[in-house]
Amino acid sequence: MVNNVFIKCQICGCVTRIRLQVGFLEQHPIIVPCGKCKTSLSGRVFIGQDRPGLKYEFNNATILSNAEKYDYIVECSGEFPTDKHCDDENKVNPITPYIRILPLMKTDDSYQNFSKVIHILNLTAKEWGKYKTIFDLYLNKSDYLVPELNKTFTKEIFECKDELDILKAVHLIELHLFHRALRQDVLNYVDFSLGILNLDKEQLKQMIAYLNAKPGFSLRELQSTIYKLENEFIEYYSYVIPAISLQYCKEDEIDYEKMGTSISSLEILKNYYQDLFEALGDLLIIPIALNNIKYRSNYDDCIANAHRIVTLNGFLNESKAHRYDLCSDNESYTNFLYVMTNNKLRNAIGHYNFEYDQFTQTIIYYPNPKDKSKHASQYLLEMENEMVHMFQAVLEISEFLYRLRELEIDFDDTNNISIFKREYQNKRIGRNDKCPCGSGKKYKNCHGNIKFK
Image (cartoon, rainbow, N blue to C red; front, top):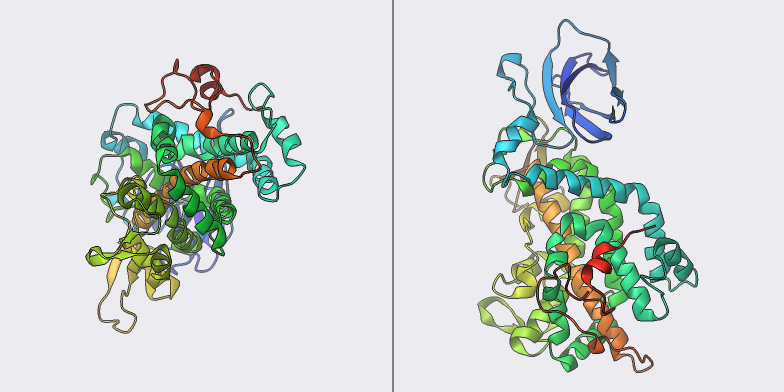
């Protein structure tokens, strides 16, 4: 269904017709430029899903009951890429974003899968306050943590009788909220992260000791960084839903020159984009060190350019941009991240060496701030796609970190818990396989069927 609303810019009086593709979201932002004064007109639409109805709110535009004449027309969708700003109705594509995107999707069930992902993220956002509290209590080693976990899980699932049980419960919440939406492969191929437990135990022990002794890089501090990024993602994900939809489309099918987004802006997203880039640059130390153990039998031996070997300290002394360059596609723990980054774009945004055209949604940036005669460009939707991939890489590193924290508990001489006594299945988990948590139950009767309270 398509709905039209006419808004009048409160600065110049120019009238814009917004042609809204009504989708499955209950609400979403609208951010479009005024064609005359170039003001960014921002608002939100509320969509009745149970009872049909639409309500618009705008911060700097007046909603008109109707308009015989209008100056510009903008296509809008909360779920999919849209055609960009237009001043000629005859040039507007009569086919809606939803109909246009369907032929571009990878499989017949891609749209349904995408809808499920956004549904999960919406539920996560609604319940986020409760779950964020659990993460905060866990980081602070609070005595109130177990009572809160008992409100979330039945005791048949987690008794929370020891440190390892509590770790599992907290991590399962993270999997439930984020991974099953954005890194389903982590759940489908759990044996990949389980493989960490089969690496050289002495090297893993030394790696954990190194990280815990390094200010800002202890396992707890890295976990805190991940929780902060997840908290920010909940704040910003509604602006990048069209970018998430791209993951369900065939590669190279999106024409970024013609198609963009009508629910976000560079101004809104640039800070989180920088936060992701900077934090992920630190978190990369985990897959890098794991690669070192797997391929060079020493957690401290990193492959640098020209095949030199450097230490982890040497890796950390590199710039964030160079750290990304050192993530080898030929080594499994970095290859599995699927990182997408534009180092020069991030540096340009961080140092304000860029310009933004909100009509074409083009970011024009200067890789060398001392030479403004040379520039490069990237579309906003491309940057958003990069952001989604960076966050997904964070989620994968969170899974690696979980395995290291299991080991940290096991290596603690004061604990009598051993994860190595548990039986793990080095294959994709079937519903009738034993659950990899070590409970002895079938997966379908254990973690594969957990119901949150």
